[in-house]
Length: 202
Image (cartoon, rainbow, N blue to C red):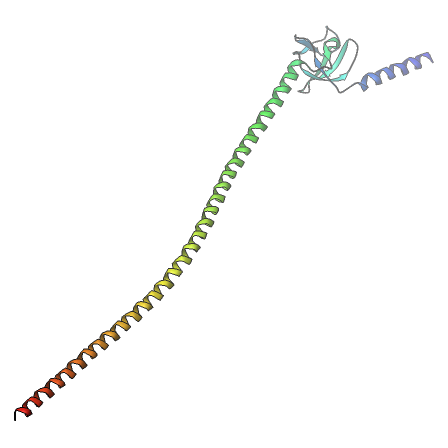
């Protein structure tokens, strides 16, 4: 009975230890640590892990823990060299990446702002050209109205000049006829006077 209880307790402890598996931890300190084939210094060294290496804890124990590296290599390391706190190097790298992402985002925004500024300048230029064209159109309409008025005035003046010329021609003809009539009357009177004088002499 006691034997079965011991087996049960061992299984429970093993289950608890296994439940801690897949926990992410990091190598602490500023030195390299050894990863071995088993939980003890007598086991063969598989790799040297640098401080800040990210590890996945497969089995956590008080002295030694079974871990897996990012390249899927498994081995045992001393538990006291593991920590859940991210190393400062990781934090610095994370901050650098975030800073780079922000710088890229700002550069992208600057590019977009420059593009928008260019589009706004182009739009302002188009609006100015539209206003100038609108003003020119209004000026053209005003000039056209003045031109039409001048054309009409010119036609009226041409008609007046034509009428004046016609009147002048009529007056000249009248004066000509009047002069011719006076000349004929004078000639008749002169001839009549000469005939009377000749009769009187006879």
